[in-house]
Image (cartoon, rainbow over the protein chains, first blue to last red):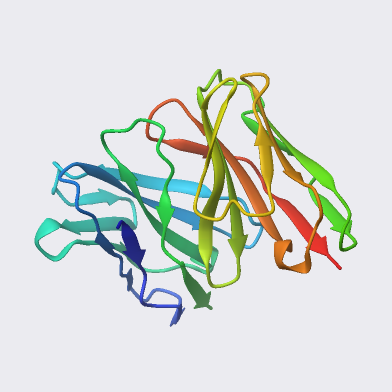
Length: 116
Length: 110
């Protein structure tokens, strides 16, 4: 069965600290997609990144970076120099590459609190 | 281009009442989904549709029904609401692997 585990329920940091959110997934499929979404206090879901199982290159976007390691089935998300506006719930999710339109399987989320 | 919209945004029901949540998308997407979000549980799939006139059960379908009579609309019905259905409901649509989410509906069942 497919599964996404976000072991960190809550993380609290002080502004400018770096923080890494962990995501471990389980799937029997050889091709799949991984996602990260942000849910700020306003409640909407904001898409951050999609990564397919063939591409293990790390990605950096501003203060955000993602580390994908198939060998450990992990897709971790790092925020560098965190800011108060980064406070949100972050979800990691898994999809099936071969079935376009297949629903996402979400982890339970990590609540990040950044204080000034 | 409104994207994915959900109606209503908030609703309070009494146990046993029925209601329908409407999801509409203007992106001509084939695929639509209903999820529920509960504290500490992430989002879980209720039902989904891969095209007009077709629906299928997701992970937590009990107590809900859906219909996709028009491509742009996906309705979620609660025939007899229960307190366990208190949740935030998200609709999403997609044309491939990226899902576009609506703003959510917060439902409370007393």
